Length: 295
Image 1 (tube, rainbow, N blue to C red):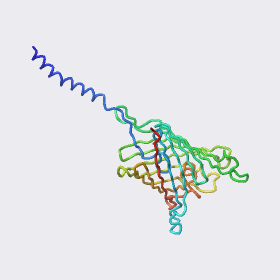
Image 2: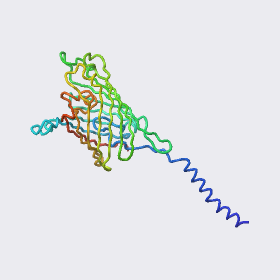
Image 3: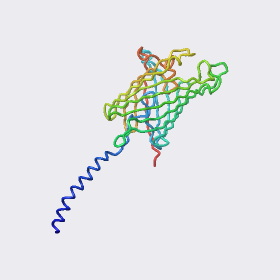
Image 4: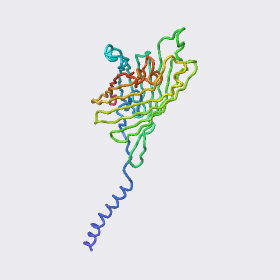
């Protein structure tokens, strides 16, 4: 009797193991978040869906030089540059606050970005990551009685963005950026003008440390040109990301001279940029360094 019991146990063991294995296969793989859709919080001029990790501070230095077609006398634009210094802090893993100061018009800017939902794979896959972004920029120079602006409220420009990105593979990510710009009307500064825009951009990785980035925004130029003394153009940017340890180094070629939404969305023209296809191209770079306060 005892040998029969042992044989039955040995025969049943593999059957039970096979049943458990089949049940695990039926359950499917666990749900996992997709990470590193982009390497930085910036694609080129604009933001990505990425946020700063909780209790981490990112210090960003950005430069933009004059037009390359200035020629050799101006060292192809390198004789003159604008700069922006920025700080970005991760309130939590999905919420980032940033503030910066630009040399153009001495603008002070701030933003708040929230990651609403993350791309996942596995049992309950979700196809995209979605973040919401709000920005605000102020020209803090003293208002003049006979100047263009008389009160500070007429120097505020804001924008709202929905950032929708998908990481298709380890090498390729794509992002769509529907946008609304809120600014004082050029013809009646006490009134707010809403200008629609939409951007598209992507990243193609060469290797673990380098990628090629591209970004383009369509802005309603019919609204922008109303009451403005100069023509404006849609901003286009091409560049390379280089990761070096704790730094992310970006090389950028763009037709925008400014580095915040107010500037590259509404002022790419006149003194702040030009037509990419006509050689009105500005070379620039950004360096970011992250510090951890998570002990």
